[in-house]
Image (cartoon, rainbow, N blue to C red; front, side):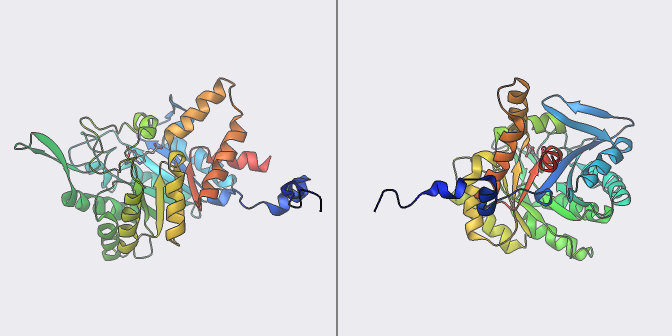
Length: 330
Ligand code: PBG
């Protein structure tokens, strides 16, 4: 018998053969497109570290929404960039806050497009932390208080649901946030609004461009007492376990690129829809290299998305969403 008997190349002999045996694909249905909304009129300001991503005032949002719908994207993730900030992030739960206003607008223009609301306080607090800050004289340092923060996050989530948000996506990493928000939503009559929990969110340098974009960098200290240590993987299972027990409807891993192992671990352990967040620096790095002519942007992005799917993601939040759909249609 001649060697080799096993010839794996047999299944790669033509495009049709490769199409037949392809295991994973990315479609428009898998993508969630993040949008930054802000006050004012006629604002369409490109974020310098994220070419192609803009701050949009409400009057410029409609054209963006029409484009997203025409591409067949099913969901947008709204981030607010408010003018007013205070210690308690009250513009996050103001019924006329920027996210609430934008949500109402989007639902009026495109009732079938799903609005995912990011539920956090950091863009809305003057100190830039995701919860209530207390200065502890004895310890000589500031702490982010867990339980008082939950109350504000619940108010934020309920006000977002009232405005018409279809999915609540809490990204604050306080303990018990899924349970608290689930209870709050249920009591307010939003028992059918799902929670897409940022279950496993690392304290990551990959959020740098986002913090510039959303003006949400912490004014002192860092987020390491609530976001996870990049060195840990088993701890991700504990974070996800508690979210599942508290009633999360989707689980998320964030960032995505450097955490593909965590995506795979969660995929193997849970049956819930799993979301990968392809974060801001993952976008900026590709854009910067592509602008230099060093990489083929389209090929790099599509390959990365396949990587997320292969690692077990069902859904991908990505600033490339519109480009990806255009590339897939071409
Ligand atoms: C808010 C939030 C952040 C991101 C999404 N929601 C920033 C952070 O935690 O500092 C980052 C998204 C990105 O980098 O694209 N908590």
